[in-house]
Image (cartoon, rainbow, N blue to C red; front, side, top):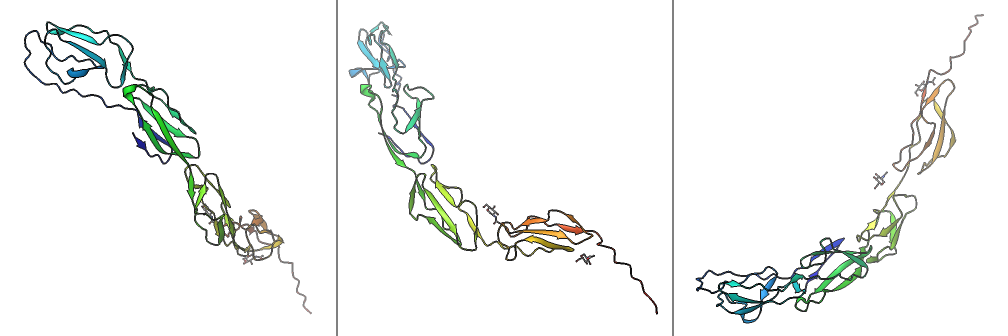
Length: 284
Ligand SMILES: *[C@@H]1O[C@H](CO)[C@@H](O)[C@H](O)[C@H]1NC(C)=O
Ligand SMILES: *[C@@H]1O[C@H](CO)[C@@H](O)[C@H](O)[C@H]1NC(C)=O
């Protein structure tokens, strides 16, 4: 049994059975005796499993090794004058078959045979909490996965200075739940008022901030206000300035008060103004 914990994204799980390791011992062979027969995909059965020394005429039987299964033939082989007669047993790699995954999918980039890798991924909003992976290779049954899912939970996003919220107030929020913030009176929101719990377990976007927005009265030398708001100038207050006679405006005369408490433009009145009227001095 194998258990896997997977918090975000995908998790990997190797379908691997223990391979039998043979320890080869060196010893003197008696004339006509056989060495231990070795086949990659097979192992010896019965009382011969541990033996290193096989007398002439002995019949031993192979079976398919762990991770392999028979596709027919006989595993019998005889020690005949120092060599083993060929056996007809055919073994192929055991195939685990496919795994079933509710609310997700499994990818088999290396196939489903013995030793291959299965990658689990969950549908959006779900994470694999635990994988119980039971394999009974002796009987060549398929692997039986038992997967426990849990729905993503988001921690509560932080409270925001000068704001009410997040509302509703909870310790944990379900996937896709929405919270809202409301700035207190006289404060302007910078950012999004509502946040959503996403599949990574975090609210998106980041919480907003609440700003006190106040623009100073514009000072435009040789200009005057033509129309628009009166102080206090709050966010989006709009004023229009014009230049006194004889001056020409450079820049945009219509200005709005921005989030950072500055005006959207700073026009200037350029020029010399009107010529002063000619004065005559009469002498009496
Ligand atoms: C508004 O929020 C953005 C993003 O957090 C930030 O970069 C920006 O400086 C904020 N504006 C003000 C005026 O605080
Ligand atoms: C234009 O404004 C400047 C700065 O306030 C001032 O010194 C100057 O006298 C003004 N010119 C006229 C013609 O009003």
